[in-house]
Structure formats: structure tokens, C-alpha cells
Length: 266
Length: 103
Image (cartoon, rainbow over all chains, first blue to last red; front, side):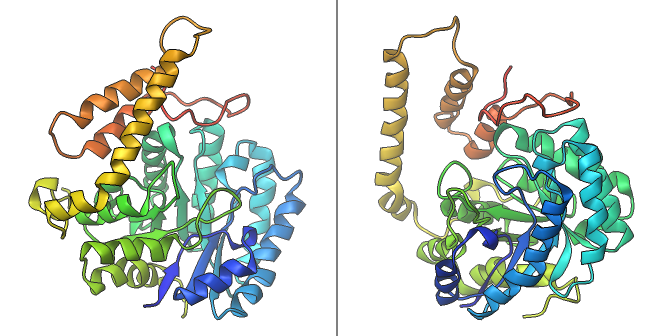
């Protein structure tokens, strides 16, 4: 079975990972712009990063038969300085026409601050102005519930964003229902430990259904697993879920959401 | 409103016996890890007055495990969550997430 990993940070992964993912059935990845583990010292650092995401990484993926798409933004962890963040945001429009750019992401909140919220609102406005899909990062641990609600409220306040064109990522048991009820798509991010596991993702599918929901690895430079999606599929197979449901959350749903951007083709 | 099926609707395709057969050893180990962690806390000397807010939240969460009500994972995540409405201006000087909200 083919699968899509719709949230993975391949700039932090090795070519061995691409090979293993391809062998496991991965046909496409989408890579949101994110925090590199340290704060960049200038907007020029982001310019170079956006070039890496739109020029170099698609070629690296293609050599393993994997289509590479990306999302651009200033991530919430580096968005707490509004003046700096605005300089980065100014760079984004010139990249939006590149063939692998699907939209704005992963925008959101980190520590639920007023500064982060200001920049979130400005990036939502950017998405609205250029009619872009949005991929949202929600905070982790104790900040997730509050942050998820603040983000959904900010998108609603914009007034021009169709929730069906927004994916709210990193949902867990206490946020998934509200995200779906408000019309958004939901992403479950699978971590080896500390957050949602493949087992819990299967539980969430069993409790909340398979409509408007996907799974991803968010593999990056930290402790993470680029094969988390096939492992979750295996977990569901092991439990006796049918092939159609497994394919829906790991291939059909990502394809449906992402195909709202004409550039997404696999 | 809502698409959730209750845990009571048998939405897991495995039999209850198969769930226990498949996952018991893994979760037995996690439970013993938790017990050992609490023992370790007790054996360590405290440098501050009062119980750490994270341990207080954890003990509230442990009580949820035994209340025989559905949606334990969701309710435990709620216990660890920040339910305040105030927003700080900036993250400057703030530490990373603690895993439980200070109350």
C-alpha cells in the first residue's frame, strides 16, 4: 500500500530515511517550515531555508521516487519577536509560486503569548490574501488545549478562511473532537514517546472516526520516527481494521486535503 | 454536535481478551515504571516546601484510571492542561513546557 507522510521535516533526515520510507510505500511528503533547534540570527537565514525547501529537498526526495511538497512561514517558536517575524513574512510571497509550495505552515502558537498571536494573525491574513492552504502547529503538553482554541478563534476572526482548507496538527484526545466539530481537518502526529503513539492514534480513529483526519510522523532533528506512519498502519492492521480505513487515513485523506492546492499531484 | 462514539460502543475491532493478550505486558511495565518513579520521588530529599505541582496533577490523573468512566485519556490530558485565559506578552524568560499547568 502507498502512503503519504504529510508532515515531516526531511531537511533534518538522512538519505537512508528516504530510502526506508520509499521501501515502506511512501510516495509523497509535505514539509512545513519549522524551528531548526536554534533561533536563526537573521531573515536571510530563512531565505536560505526557503530555498532549501523549494529547490534542493525536492530533488533529494525525487531520487527515491518520493514527491516533495512544502509549506512556508515563520514558525511560532521564532515568531515571538514581531519585528523580526515581519521581515521573514515579507520574504514569503516571492516563494509562493514555486511548484512544490502548498501553502502557509506550520503556523500556530508555542507558548500562547500575545506576540505569537499577533504574528499568527498576520500569517493567517497572508494565507487569506494569497488564497493558500494552512497547516497549523498546536502547542505541546499543558499548552495544547488553550493554544488550539486560541488558534481556531484567530482563524475564525479573520473571516475569510474556510475551515476545510485548514489542517490543525498535533491533535490529541482532548482536542480532536473540537477541531473536527469546528470544520477543520485534524492531524495526529506520532511520536516514539511523550506524545501521541501509533496505538493511541488507532484508538482515536476508533473513537472519533476517519473523516477529515490524517496521521503523520513530524520526523525531525529530535527523537522521532520517520517510519511512524507505516507503523501506525501496522498497528491498525494488527487490530483488524479494514484496508479501506487504513488507506483512508494514511493516503486518501491527505490526498483529498492537499489536492485543494492544484500543485499537489502524485 | 460531535462524531465521537463512546468507548462503550465496541469500536475496537479486537475482542477484549485479545486487547489484554496483546497489550497487557507493555502496560504492566509502564505501570511498574510509574510506581518506581513515585518510590524514587519519596526516597529523594526535598529542597522546597510542598509538593511539586506536576506530582499533584499526576496523582489526580491516577485517580481517573480507577473511576471506571470512559475517555480516561482525554480527561487526564484535561487535568494536565492550562485552563487559564490570560496571555503573557512574550515568551522571553519562559521555560519550556512542564507537562502540567501550575495551579
